Amino acid sequence: MRAVRALLVALGVGCGLWGVWLMRDFTREQLTSEAFWLAGGVILHDAVLAPVVVAIGYGASRVLPAHFRSGSATAFLVWGTLTVAFLPVLSGQGGKPGNETILGKPYVLSWVVLTLVLVAYAVVSAVWRRRQTRSRDMKTLHGSSS
Amino acid sequence: MRLPTVADIERRIPRPDDFESRARGTALTARVGTALGVCFAVCFATGMWSHFQYSTPGWLTLSPNPAQLYRWTQGLHIASGTAAIPLLLVKLWSVFPRLFNRPATGARGLVVEVLERASIAALMGSTFFMLASGTLNIIGWYPWEFSFRRTHEAVAWVAIGSLVVHIGVKLPVIRTALGAPIEHPDEHLDPSAPTRRTVLRGAFAASGLAVLLTAGQSVPWLRKVSAFSVRPGDGPQDLPVNRTAAGAGTSETALDPAWRLEVTAGDRTVSLSRDELLAMPQSTHRLPIACVEGWSRSATWTGVPLRDLLALVGAEPDADVVLRSLQTKGAFGSSRVVGNVVKDDRTMLALSLNGEKLDIDHGYPARLIAPNRPGVFQTKWVNRLEVDA
View 1 (tube, rainbow over the protein chains, first blue to last red):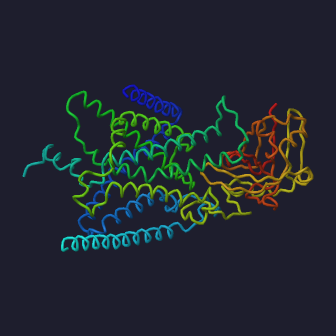
View 2 (cartoon, chains in turn blue, yellow):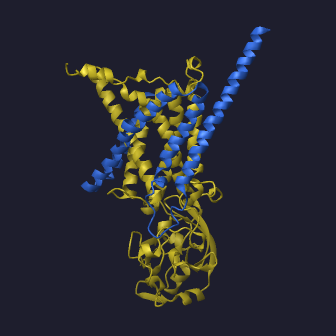
View 3 (tube, helix red, strand yellow):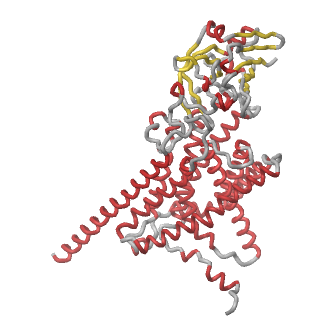
């Protein structure tokens, strides 16, 4: 195990250094721009996205009725991660002037539909969960009375 | 009133224990991480395969077979990268409290910790970079100063390297976590809270949906389902266009009746009009346009096999060829076809597409179509064909 781990670390460092070597002829301007994009994601995640998600989770666990929590968490997870994944097409950027064949779908509309579908999922799963707990409670009630 | 001391500030910064969700934990992290690792491995391998099409290493001979190969590898490249986005976000969520671990005491512990944190910073920075630059390349938005292809390649090595280091560092933790049950031992204390299993299922569902909703750009039967895919399928002659004639600066030159195709080998040159090309024996094949952005589409192409054109100037049917375009704007105005691909009878100078005269945006008067070849090298508006001496 020790040898495997050492090998993996050495191999990984080697690959990383090869990557840096491939940048040896990049201009200062290119490297600055690259560094901005390398650091930008980490900062954006650790300083903005993650704290916001933690705050939402904290709030939801106190505000939402019990049967809503699980389904809402799934809906929010799917909604949040897909929104990030689809940010490029939702941004309204890109494409080429005079070329309608690249970004040819109503992306924002689809995103609104996606959001509504996931809200509906959270509600349906909450109703289903409440029924489940109720019938379980009823069973416990009958069980104890007999 | 006194100013806050370092200790006061430290007390205000949350500690890992302050994060209360029982859904977090290494049992979840290791499972999502494994799936993420598989995605990254596929993405890296297919990505390097794509780079080989641009600069082919000496040990590799590009083959025209299977004709659909690049379509598959590049479609897989984009799909695995897209699948990674939800997995990465969930994985980072599951370990976020560890960001607030207090530094170890003692010089050795501190050095190890700094190194480990540095490797994680490299891993996070490079994976964010890869996913962001890759998805922005799909829509053709380049808000940066570097070369996309070369930087995406170099940072890929940093990403895969720091991933391998990370696996090496965490191997014992990963093994223990994967062997243990996923549930938190105190899960029953708060039965209405989302569990690790809920989050794991949610992560896989999101990952699958991300692929399903974008893969229509390369998988024809998903075209209607993929509401977030680019290149939905409309375009002249039912085929999307990456670079239009206007974008390439060929709107006028391509329609010039004086257009001729020049075929040269050494001191021999043959000049052909489009009618003369049409009078030559034509061959018809169904071949895909498969682009680096992941989109691909098959179409029926008719034209003159490249090797027949080579015969006109007395060149060998498997000579290397360079094609030049009328294109005056943008990159990839010429491309090289290796002999191995030239001699294939499906490699042709196409004159028509899906039974109609080639649209100007698809490269009228003539364009290259070859099997198993990235779209950027399927040179359009060809006016010169040079055989390597």
